[in-house]
Length: 259
Image 1 (cartoon, rainbow, N blue to C red):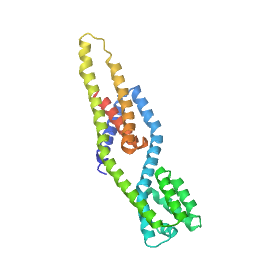
Image 2 (image 1 turned 45 degrees about the vertical axis):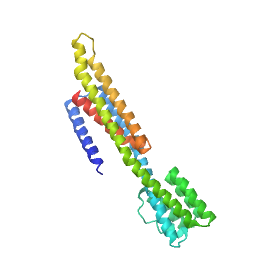
Image 3 (image 1 turned 60 degrees about the vertical axis):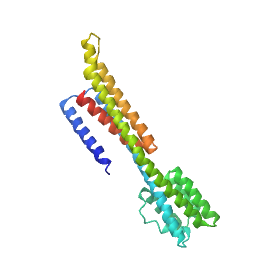
Image 4 (image 1 turned 45 degrees about the horizontal axis):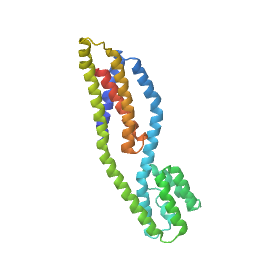
C-alpha cells in the first residue's frame, strides 16, 4: 500500500500536466500518436495485467490452502472431507477453484478428476505440478499425511523465499526509474545548452528535429524499460504493464513541460 502512494501522486501530476497541455493547445503530431498508442495498448495490457495479478494471487494463496488441507488430514479426516471443509475459507483468487473442487467432490466426481479440473482452471504450471503430486498420493494411498506435510513445508518455504526476493528486487525497479529520469535530464541539458551553443558556433543544428528524436527515444525507452523491469521483478512482462504506463507518462509529461 505504501508503494502506491508515490505512484498515485506521479499519475495525478501527469494527468494535470496532460490536461493543461491539451487545454493550452501545446500538442503535436507525436502527442496524438502517443495518445492513440496508449488507447490501443490499454485494453490488452490491462487484461494481461489483471490475468497476471489473478495468477499471482492463486500461487500466493495455494501454499496456505495446502497447509490448511494438511492440518485437516492430520486430525484424521479423509482427503475428500478435508477439502470440503475448506470451501468457505478465504484464498483470494484461488477461492473459486477450491469451491469448484469441493462442489465436484460433493457430486461424486472422483478425486483425481476433480483435482485435474482444478489444475487446469488455475492455469499455473507450479500448481499443476504440485496437484499431480497430491493426486498421486491420494490414488496410491500409503502415508498421505507425511506427503502432505512435506509438500506443505516446501510450498510455504518457497512462498517466503519469493516474497523476500521480490522485496529485494524492488530496489532494481527503483533503479530503472532513476536511470530513466537521468536520461530525460541529459536530453534536457542537450536541448537547452549544447545544441544552442553549437548553433551559435556556426554548426547547422535543427533543434526541432533533435527534440522530436529525443521525445520518441524517451517514449521507446520507457516502454522497453518497463518490460524489462516487469520481467526482472515480477517474472512476467505483463507484470511490468504499470511500470510501462508510469514511465511513458512521466517521460511525456516532463518532455512537454520542460523541453
